[in-house]
Image 1 (cartoon, rainbow, N blue to C red):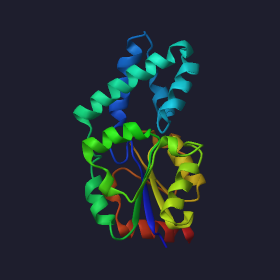
Image 2: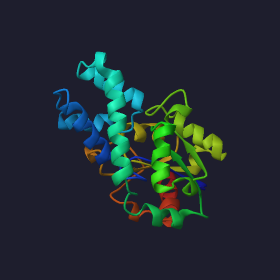
Image 3: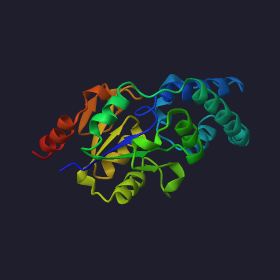
Length: 219
């Protein structure tokens, strides 16, 4: 029996992935670096620390990481404050699920940047528990962030459905033992790891869909 639905934040609850990309294009253009199109999918679901360590190695920028991090955060916050919106269908889905399941949020975003999002969109009332990027020793794609929210919600993996959009997040959710739903848009479908279901919109979800997901997979 499904008792909880847990959401990733970026690209699932809030439409932030285009804003992150816009900020990073601006940031790297300032130092003459063009990020190949095929690299963007590799960044989704990373913590800020892991992201800058990764791009430092990949583009030979290790000596500039502190400055890049500060400017990158500034550009992201400016865009969030001006343009951030909920993903289409999220608020109506949350109202539909509330009362049927416990609801949680797991994000690789650090708590201080999550607070920027919360200040803009008032996320707090939507979820019983929130796990941010620095709240666990291991980050996505390790399953620890999802296991931590299960611990906080006092539910088992087989009682949990996770909605994710990134390769790192989908691997983390699947390896936690949760029923895993992939939302398309951030990552090409052919690059997604094995999951229990794939949807193109949050509007496809309902309590009936979620309960049937577990029943069909179990069968």
